[in-house]
Image 1 (cartoon, rainbow, N blue to C red):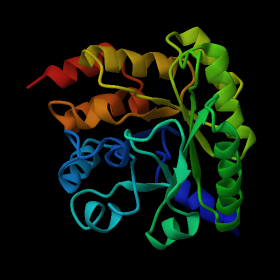
Image 2: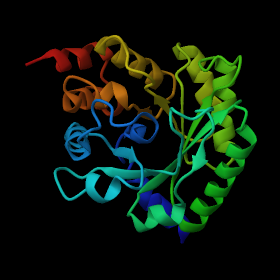
Image 3: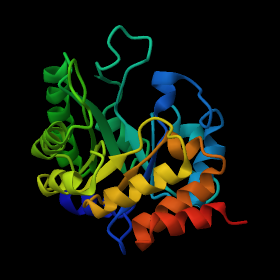
Length: 266
């Protein structure tokens, strides 16, 4: 029965027609504080929902007053792990919520952040295993944010990204979020080596809208099943139109050029 529940919940965060997803993480408040774009959470969540986002990622404390009850519906992914930028080791992630808490909050999925190659990798992988076990028990989809991060590690290196993505799948993730490796061919090898859907991270704010859309286009050509982009959406001049432009690439297979034309149109 838990597998039926998982399939039903996955349909709330993945478009059933395209099989792809546009996820907007907004869990940055724990690590970075009330940065631009996530001060007024209901406003921003409504903006990306109107643009066609399939789901947002937020922490448990934001759910009661930051999600649902207004505007267009959007999937809810509750983030279970965190750290702050003031920590001596920001790469150390601890669990701050449980799968059971997320169920009580009405979550459609949960997510966990793992820094592969960090000094606390062992503890983080152990926690991922625990969360995966609980997700299987309760029929809860698991998004594993798998990043190669640590001393001397290039977080965009193909081998490092491939290892991180595969580790997430090996430990029971239903969807893996990881970095784009910079080229279609290298990312094809990442997705080929990961048996579950891979979504590409947006990372820090990029220099231009064209850069964002081109990365999304290349990632999709490389076998990605969608994106999980935060700051490059919620800090955009128009988060609704930026979400829509990205969704056009992800769900409608339009080119980055066409999406940019839409974004810049009146």
